[in-house]
View (tube, rainbow, N blue to C red):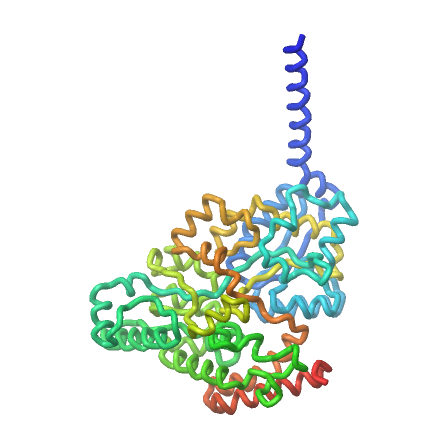
Length: 477
């Protein structure tokens, strides 16, 4: 009798479990049933993580829900232009827009986006059991308001790292030549002086040996914001100039005269350092954005460089696209020793923690169906394959997946660096005026790159222009 009861109880438990599992497994088809025939439209930049959404996740979502998703991948500037114009005009063309970390503050200030956290609370039938905001890394905090509500589902997050060619750095003949020329052992640089010395050596080595080889990358396009970002987000911080040199706590001062740092001695030293690297980089550097820097490294044309982490995986592992597979080392960007200690102490940051999220415009005509898709790309179960295809991690569980652990080995510890030392990097400063100040100062910056203005004079002009723009916008009183 007791045994019979036990069997009955076990059977009942199994039955309940089966029903729960079945209900969980059917969530996407059940939730999507009401939206059959809906076609969602999204716009994003053409990057490895975004292409994975278009090529893999969107078709999977359609198969599970019956909701079709069309993802438009385009250039960085076109992505912004199309998304912002759609939301400003309230035309409702897009149901999802890519939100880069640096623009979220402006979008929130203009009430462009749907509150995802609140929307899922308001309609529990839309809430997937596999979507949990607490599973995101701390990078998700950049896409929350002051109440902690989420306005974008993180879809990529990466740091800009120092990549170097292990085959070159470990070559005995090259090591011997470097030692003879510099008196030092060849190893990844930790300071600006070491990085410069290595860059100069390899550029000369390439020339002397008739090789298409230079000592460093340079994201130095003379008419694209990528060069402005490289300086202010990747180079200046390693010299101790943070938040573009603008002091938000001091009436948004930018000039040294008013308490800012945009034209400080540190900023001027940083710019001269970077301009010298640009001058000994491959000739395509003057036309390179973040994309071309990655392809330059993958083509084997440089010995070292600062490269966005989103490109690290394919550079290190895709033999169809990269000539340096198996020969990619990863390290922290070089910096002044005092700055590194400052950053480790909690002041400032070492470089840019970049990434983005998919947000839902207020103007979307398919908000409920779009909320389902955003949850689909935010669940743990899709993250590991995505992280292997493109080196981005947004969910904490992804780090422990066997596929990702194996990929980390191929990347010489990039994921481990992201996990353990990501705290040394930071996103863009929380400026709602981000785009306006960049656009106001960028023409002067391009003039510096073209040699029309000296670096010291140019930074003086940029700092003054930044303050002028901030005054016009009402931030400086």
